[in-house]
Length: 161
Image (cartoon, rainbow, N blue to C red; front, side):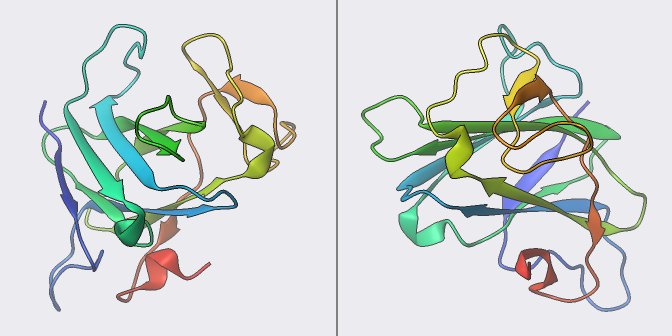
């Protein structure tokens, strides 16, 4: 089960082609200097699993989407950790279960919100919600979500929110 990832300026396939991909767009209310993206098998135990892929981006690259292109897997778990200082532990973490939509490029829009700053959820399988979602209030630790995705139809749309 392989997932392919790429840091890309565009989340769209060339004209006439349909990519099966997820463009992850991150915005933050915090002064972050780096992000770690870690891609795991769907439903992985984050307490013991090793990532299938990982990428660290610096402050200059934070606005660029992180794109995961479908390989053999239909879903994956993404963990995003934000750092104010790379010599210290992350100050914010967000995780989500993500499912590909065949022949579609979809956007996962992640807000690393102040309400989750230095929030340790304490147990694997929980993440801090930066925004209210369903019955879960912003700043609350709850089960890792399978968030709603937005279809990307033009270059840059994944980050236009």
